[in-house]
Image 1 (cartoon, rainbow, N blue to C red):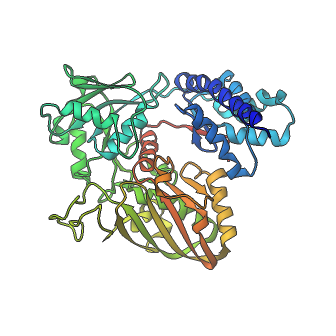
Image 2: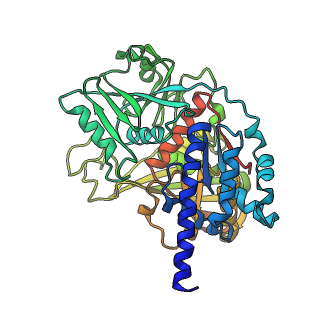
Image 3: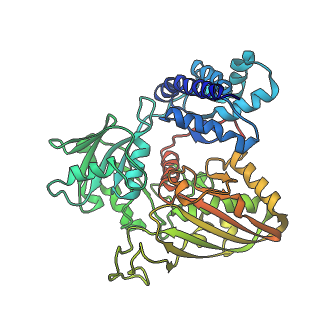
Length: 478
């Protein structure tokens, strides 16, 4: 291909991606339809991000998906009365072009494949959400909720609750939302309303409330009712502590973004969210590590059976460690986080059994905190009931990432060059590094990357939706 043809090809892709953007925006804002390409979200995506998502299709199916081949599916989708669902136009387009030679049947094909969403009656009412705490997870949850702003959005971020309230606090909180050293700048506009003590982000009006205890707030004074309070402080972890939230007028349910103590249900979205009942008022979204490993363990156990195993977590340092050597109540954590690898304990392996009881007593675990600010890895060493090899194990996990009910939790890469920083912003609970897989006979060792901040936050949003009875189909099925 000549130099001019390369440029012409790029220009064609660029223009096609630009033409997609307004259609993608309207689909979400007006119909609640989120469009993805083999799991990669196109909501608020730039033209370059749309082009890149199409290039990645070759890794999954071994063949190209050109934008001119997927564009008719976005057009057809915009004409259908589809509501409140996630649609993978990448899978639809690849399957279609394997069967048909031209685009004449696209609309009829889409009508058949999306029939469940077309007949879906959207009777779900928007629900109020309060973020109690505004640290690493709180701010990322805010970003995820704000990016979905629109008339069809059912999760309405109404308020954040903070301790403090000193002069300048509001602007500093807004600044932390605007800029993030790991996840980059906020995609949009963040303003401060000092008079009314609020932050306005992309048109979302967020009341800022100051309180020292969960039971001090009257949310109804701010027009908030029947709200889900997401506690991401990590201070209260049992039913007595988290139950304080329910004493505040306007709060009806509580979600903890950490492992819970006692009989509180620990939920890993994609695995055991069906355990959440309408009458459950306090639920935990477990830990980032438990979310990363449980879907993979479920997939492996379903096919091969797990006899026993060990999970070693290579985890980025967190806010509870010290920047420089100083006193800390926990062993070793007082040593400088950016300068040391620190062995510490983790309950993530044992916590798996709360979401996947079949693995009760079968797993041990440990953790090493390392001098990176984000993205961690779980090394899962398993003894299996059945035999396998590297090729078969990888092919199975690749299929799980693309075609199974766990496709929104498990991602898969065959890159020989990927490193931790490449996974910043991953929306999956965990990413299988297939090049590192070891499997022989009835033993296997799997390496699973995970963005312990953003990927986990995406899992939390899934639990929020389930707690509030907001159900979204992923199409096509399988």
